[in-house]
Length: 565
Image 1 (cartoon, rainbow, N blue to C red):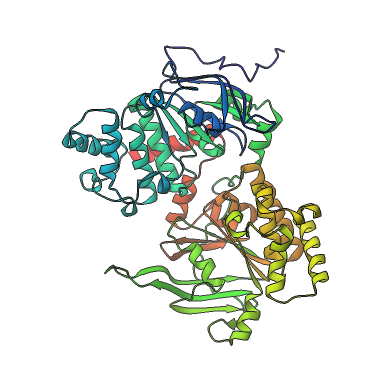
Image 2 (image 1 turned 180 degrees about the vertical axis):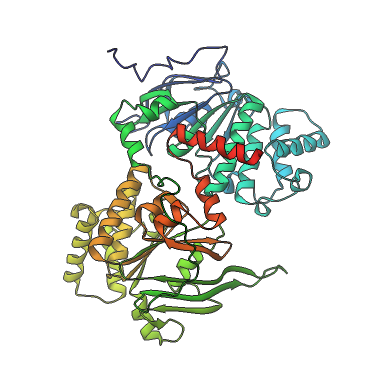
């Protein structure tokens, strides 16, 4: 049996055919701390090829991409070679880099909201990108801007070229970001988590678009992602990095079918997956009546916001009815704007419904006294999406976890400190972490602190809004396991809000599907996620990328065939 190929070597299986779009040789990036951010990475992206650079936070994948476009931090020291279309870009002057950026290499950013200028029209931003590198009249630049919007398949480009970013949907904004990247016909596109901020169905549209653009432009694409479903969907080859080093590389089918490294196997094993379609029985159960034993009962609530600047009122929720029983986890799924976060905040007492009732332990929240409401609210706790934003950076872990106990005047200081220690044990953090500040913790550790803080007052209902969406896949898996264990041991009920259906399937007993403020389907989690009764739920499930290139691409072919028919 032959020895495995050296993972640090340049792609041995890729046939060199002309000048590659990107060639990285022994790239090293260091800062003022012992471990290098990038420790000798080599890779190659050919024209018309999609290479996925996969790894968790701190693996060096984003730093490698920044080196390719000359955007390393000033404090970074870099060595090795990075060539774009045969031109060396490492350690070059800003003038030399400006001649390469846009024309030879361009970046598709993760968050379109921050990549676009909110006070300039789409057309203005495209014209600026064009006229930076080409001598074009305003009219010629405008015509090219419309052509670019047509290329990225934005409907009615002649009209939308005059839109501001806020007038576009999230998916349309990401298409504009891609159009900006394509403005000057680069040979290399750097796509850094290009779909992370998007809903699953919009993500599917953007991935489809990237595949079509690859065919139309013959550009090479370096896809930086931690989402292995996305990799399985569109990548040709994969490079896996850990702690700044390449540990495995190869054809996408080989990597998924026969990973040779324990880290790669660990990444693949940690990905939550949906059960096979058809494993359940379709039963539509919308707004069904429930017994009176519920922790929370939502009776036909509507949340409507008044229109601003002459606009019509916006209905965030419309006659939604839902029940959460003791010890039950109800997953709430839907796309951006579906109302799922509004539902959680309304149940938690942060938003007052326009109509309808919310009963907590059988008591109408709108009908109780202030004193009773304060006591009832103690039985509800929130786990936020981003613990970095929810934890006071000045507070130690102990102070953050103890704060709810102080607010509700629970126990003496010694009893509170004992409770903090017990909670750190429960979320599997060392007690020594009590003295640490949030910036001294990893993302997964901060989320454990947020969970401990939420559990401090022993709530009956936990409202978790996208609690793992900001975490790497293996960290996400560990936090989900912890959540399930705590829920089982402590018996609290939970409203688990997420756009990730595979994550919801892992933790939920029942699922509620929201669309445009309407509850379109509820039922047993396995039934809803394997044999959905509603067409919208089926569309959501069909858009979820599966972390297996054989199954994923077979599904893509089936969808294309069905749409063609």
